[in-house]
Image 1 (cartoon, rainbow, N blue to C red):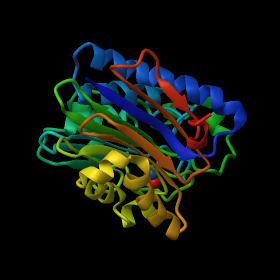
Image 2: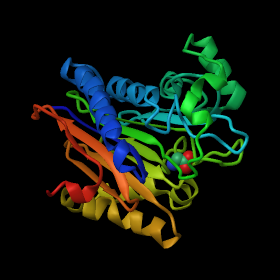
Image 3: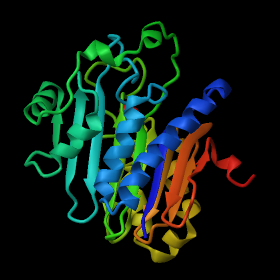
Length: 293
Ligand code: GLY
């Protein structure tokens, strides 16, 4: 049995952008499904799905990511394996097409997280896809006046071998200070994976998520089997209330070690797609309240 869930960011989605979000999520989950259905690993599925979302300017990751206050794209990403707690992460990296692949390449390296020029140098040494930093800004992005943060992508996968993996990737918050790092590359904040319990990825106001170590809180909730079985309400919603209490906005996706997915958000919208080996088609929603319709 395999299971996969991903999201396109906790944010507001304009009605005329819903189709792009839906299509992007479907393309990404298809990429992950192809890996898992072919007997591939959770970490390969996370990277494959993440690359699709990063290549799509609809989402705030990779190409088309948010611009900082200098008008530049600086990105953060992470990949974590639940079997041996390997973590690979990059922060404020510029000029790479796929930060999630750089993070994945970091998984078995001595340092867990590389930042800025050092992260890009690592990507170059590994032969990963470099670009001019300006190439990450689509033509329409240069003229964008959108001030609303477009936040983070995340993917969680369970493969047929019982291994969990999680990935995050983001351009951070629109207009943020150069050099700023949010929750997305920090384990226990924007993500975590433990084969015995489950895995989680968050999206939203990074400082709030990191202050409240949301991923660590979810892992704690998952350690109570009864709570985990109750789904999103018990596992995710207490952590979202913590963020709300300090005026933050967030959304999260979870997979338990049994492959049960949950998702919740306090942002207006949160594009999510999920699928298991039992499904013929992915389930895709733009917000939680649509799920019951
Ligand atoms: N959640 C992504 C960030 O705050 O950078």
